[in-house]
Length: 254
Length: 254
Image (cartoon, rainbow over all chains, first blue to last red; front, side):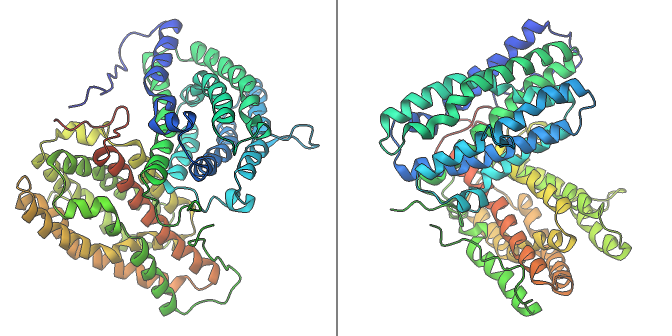
């Protein structure tokens, strides 16, 4: 009925750390959202300004969820060393006061500014697709409800992120005359941040997921996270490529 | 930018109960999922068996969430009379032991049986669309996180349900030779259950949402719930009408 049905063997023998890492990387090869049709259209220069604006507006919902997700995760962590490592993720997104670092959300809003979107409208999230908000909130809940190492594993899609950022920066600048260099600063910064975060999280998962049960949980966490990202592009595709915009969602100007 | 932007006036004058009810009913007229393209295709006899099976499989996720939603709601209720009224919703779905009443989930599984789906596969929810699961879990969370009367209001899409059930029963039986009468028992039962529940909830909202702030919250709760249902059909449409089935989701046989 379904060739992708998960072979879940919680009582099976534990994998080695290398086997676990390979299984996690295989999820990305199969399911990361760079394989989605909307991604291909966007990076291939096939979208118009309104469609790219819809993407940026919806992706803001995800950016906005990330520091809340990291705070929700930290609320469960009793190990001070782990919290001290993790908190820089929140600063990466929210910046720091006094503002030596403006933060990723501010950089994202420069992109939505450049696309002609009103900041209050973007940050209100009123025009975002409901499916985007459901998917992002599912991620915030996931890191609260799952075992700690499984919650950490859900961040491991960052292993697959650098190539998408690199592709996005060059592709978007080259193919869309409505996108300018400063608006790509978010992705440029993530090129350094994502590998650092991913390497830390990967080492944590290799060290702490010692039973088959937890290992399967970690692999499934990466599938779950790929589903979050994929569902966001699915919703964008139906609304802004197929034209079935749900009631209340952002309407690009004609 | 968006003609549907909500006019939120939390400090405005309170509405009368009749005005509040009219505003809630207007949300249904604008946004209930009987206006969705997938709904029209399904009820118009335009889908094949695999597409209807995909719908039933995904809709199971919603059915399965409802008793958990009602339990989550009850976990917050200190008023014994309200809990005693509310609990019959859980029995409506889960049945009763000793089994004088099999419950709505069992009736739903007769529908998925009839469509040729394996019960273990359906109840595992492995093949359901991620967007479906995100939307349904958002509903479970909503009734925990929102003010009590707003949580009650989110059930008020049941005001709009009887006509959809009536239309579904006659339309599906007439137009699809792979659907038989016993499989429509779920909807037939809801024809009686939904109005009873909706009338109780509507009265509760009329009685308890006395400030403009709570009233706007209640109206918005119905919008939220319409979004949940709409997002489920959006996901089905993209996957099973447009053919963009996400990795891991149910693949109808050719």
